[in-house]
Every structure is written in structure tokens, then in C-alpha cells.
Image 1 (cartoon, helix red, strand yellow):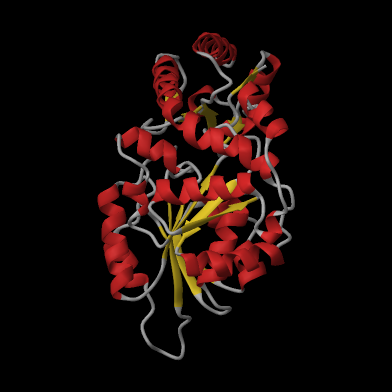
Image 2 (cartoon, helix red, strand yellow; image 1 turned 30 degrees about the vertical axis):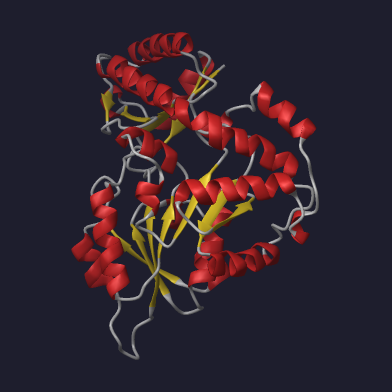
Length: 343
């Protein structure tokens, strides 16, 4: 099978597996795991933040940010199709007791003026604005990069109103690679940042949340409350460190493969590439074929290609470390053959 469902499906490299086996470990709840400490220090330095914390997943990292920044009855501002709103099972209300105020963005980027207008004034009828979240890259916008200038504008508005900004940066290293800057250039315009080790960076598990030392101190307690206190977590941190220090430099290969795949698909009758491909996500509309996304995905599966439904007629393909250029060429042929069979 050629698996283009997500970059979460990558398997750990041999170097990662060896690092897991040889990792120096301790009890991380006691703060004694040297491999975890090294990973957290490295991540904080890369992001330009004082401290960082290893968490089990991107969703846990995002929820810890909401729980740490906000109080029950407050409101968070975020883009209308952001991951926190769309894919985290309503956790912000279930866990933090906050409500969402969504803003429809352009390719994942919220208009700073709309953000300013959404920040609540002083009125006993209104919830207080507890946090602003920016997703970068933006998944449902097809892996779009939210521009640094946009983030800067939103951050300056947030500072004026004393509202913290959080980046859901599950694929933030993809954004940095696409723009050609260090990841801290994005992170400087937020109080806290979450990114995944287990997506394009290829680690088997784990995410990082980073911010001030005071924020991480409180976040650590929230991680414990959520059942995320791990013991000899160095076996997770060791491959995570390899992902962070060695795998980020190859993300451009995934981006190039995504552009190639998009170019191939654009020439297939009945298919239309629905997004501007900036990173490693290609969204394809199959509407002209007269089939649903589920039907098209099922036909691909029968031919040995895995993809994901992304809407009634939208199909998502995500390039990743485990799919070679040769396999991508094969996938393009399968996609073409399946499209022809639907004509």
C-alpha cells in the first residue's frame, strides 16, 4: 500500500529505533529523565522560548494551552475550520469550560481587524476573551502557511488587549521550511506554541508545548491532571530528538513531492486540485466525476493507494517520509486510472 492518508503514518527510522533502545532514562514526573530534558531544552531553544514540555499528542498540547491560559466561562478566538474547533471533540468546553468564537479566515489566516473586533469589551453580558489561537500550517486550508506578517499583526492586537496567543503548530516546521526561515520567526509572535514530533518530522509519538518558564510550570500540572505524566519517557524523547534535529531539514522533499503530485493530478480529466499547494497536503475535488469522496477513496484503496476523505467531494493526499518519488509516480497512475473508471 502507498499510504498518503497523513504524515502521521510514518514509521520510525532505524536510527530512531536504535535511539529508543539505547536511551538514557529516568522518571520524568520527577523531572529526572535526561533524554526528555534534552529534548525539551532543544525544542525551547529552537522556538526561542524559555521552556518546553513533552506531551503525548498535539491535541493534549492544545488543551493544556487552553487550560493554562483560560478560566472557565471565558472564550477563545480561533479560525472557523481550525483543528482545535474541528477535530478535538469539543474538548475546550468539556475540559476547560470555555466557549469558542470562530472567525472565517482566508487560507487559514484570520483578518487582524476581525480578531480585534472579536475581542470582548468590558460588559457583564459577555464572556472574557481568554486566548487567541492560530493554526500554522492550517490543515483544512490545505496545508496553507499563515504569513508571518499576519501573525505579527494579530499578536500586536492581542498584546494591546492583554490576551495570550497560542500557535497550534502541529506542522509549524513545514511552514518554516516553505518560507525558508527558522521556526522561531513564527514562534516569536505567540506566547505559547505546540508542535507535533509525530507528523512530518517522523517520530513515533509525542508533541511539544513551549512558552515561558511560568507557563510551563502550570502546564506541567495540567499534563499530570490529564493523565499525561509519563515515567521513563526517554524512550519516546530519544526518537523525538532525532526528529527535531535531523528530520526537519528534509521536509522540503515532501513539499516537492506534493507539488509534483498536484501537477500530475491537475492533468487528469475530472479532477481538480482544490488548494494552493505550499507544503505537503494536496486536496482534490472529485465532483466532476459524479462520485463522492468516500467512493473515490474506496476505489483507490482497491488499487493499493490510501487517501482520506476531506468533505463530500474532497479527497486529501499527504506526502510523507515513507512515500518515495517512485511510489508517488505509481500513485499518480493509480489516481488517473481510477478517475478514468468513473467517467
